[in-house]
Amino acid sequence: MREIKVSEITGAIRDMCIEANLRLSGDMKEALLAAENEETSENGKHILRKLQENLDIACADEIPICQDTGMAVVFLEAGQDVHFAGGPLEDAVNEGVRLGYTEGFLRKSVVDDPLLRKNTGDNTPAVIHERIVEGDRVKITLAPKGFGSENMSRIFMLKPAEGIEGVKNAILTAVKDAGPNACPPMVVGVGIGGDFEKAAILAKEALTRKADDASELPHIRALEEELKGLINQTGIGPGGLGGRITCLAVKINTYPTHIAGLPVAVNICCHVNRHITREL
Amino acid sequence: MTEIRLSSPLKEEEILKLKAGDRVSLSGIVYSARDAAHKRMEEALSAGKELPFDIKNNIIYYMGPSPARPGQVIGAAGPTTASRMDKYTPRLLDLGLKGMIGKGKRTEEVHEAIVRNHAVYFAAIGGAGALLSKCIKRSEVIAYDDLGTEAIRRLEIEDFPCIVVIDPTGKDLYRLTSETVVS
Image (tube, rainbow over all chains, first blue to last red; front, side, top):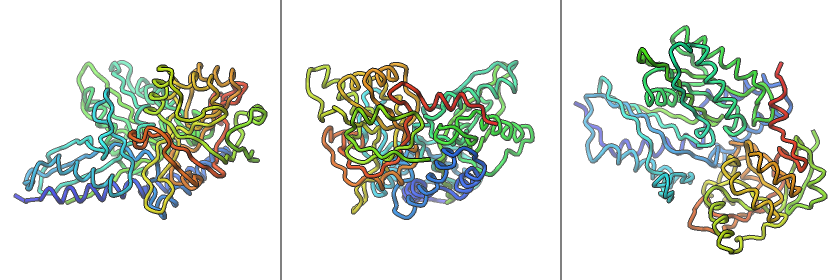
């Protein structure tokens, strides 16, 4: 049994909130540069250049890349041989978010009740997904999620008979409906299978994959590539102002499902696809 | 592509020259307001009260900034999705609002109100909050302080880059581009 103090979790989450909001990961930066080279429309190229300039300014002047510094989504994988000491784990995660967002000059975008809507003032609570795994390590992935793109996300409960064509249509429908609202070029996270909520979580997790990785499953890898091509033929383009580059990547995660079902969740993210992982 | 230099508050004769797709460099005064501030303004109007600023010929920037670090004017300050304000917008346009800066599609009702009032809708680059913050030279909360990032701010902007999405004839750049087939 390995003991981990929950204060270590708090410290890690604090730092990750700040880091993720000021510096985009290398894979996403490379995807933007590649996009600029592939883009043919004048407006599109202009916007892609400005987005890279924006990343440089954010880093140099410690200004968040985007003012929507998101709701903090935390994937926490805890080894079953870990004992968390010093207080409740979820309180420790939220304390990390509180410290990160207040000390890091990040925007507080969370309201306490979805209908009464009073700002909590410190961006808590986080959305926390916990999983117990083998071993004595703790892996934390933090993904601050902006809501311009989150609002354009969809879930489709397809019939098995709709098959792969139905899946493609669902994803293209979500992307076309999102259009300029979701700050294209987008990253499209897709969850196929499981049940209603599992599909949505798969889609969110898919967004935390590196921009340049590909699914290990050959048929899913092919689907990711094909959809990227189809999405980049919609003409939406950077900023929605027309062009080739509507998405930077399509990431699909899957899970077994019921004989009667084919759930498809499409979680859309803007070009500021922030995620950071740390292991303790 | 040439850039049109405009100053805010806007003049009607200058708005009428704008075409969907024009790149604009904007300087002058704009007011930030987003969801919660719009709700309060609507409530104020419905109660027969005045708006917290003179809306005539002015521009609303749909934006809620991140906090400024010491020494900075403002934190990240890019546009938010305009469609969430669609419900409130026609009434404000009918009261003299002339311009809006945001991102994303607008409803048919907003299109009609833009045409009816000779107004304009600009898009700024979504997700370029750090870059756009550099065009903001002064920022002052003028109303609804308790709303935090959603308070109304009077912003002095200089060479703020945006693009005309809906021009006063109702032409919509997003609709024009979605009709173009990409080869």
